[in-house]
Length: 99
Image (cartoon, rainbow, N blue to C red; front, side, top):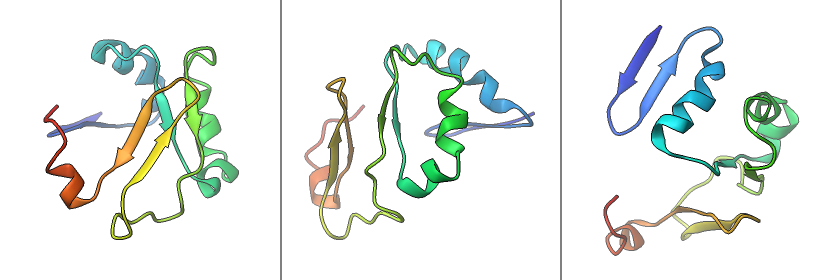
């Protein structure tokens, strides 16, 4: 198994998706938000991810445009759970608090 840790952690291995619940728990994430687009959903990839998550606690936003760009402004989505996901522009990023 390969693990890359920088600003995010990437785990690469056959069946690594099975570690998703453990990784979310380690990060303290109880209500994950899966952000996808229609192409990923149509290919069945989002469904593969969702089979490893609790359907009661997970929210899905599938309205991401294919190959999104921040050049036309911020992409902000609010999921049914009230979670928010954003891809800010450079000017918006400078006003956002550090994690």
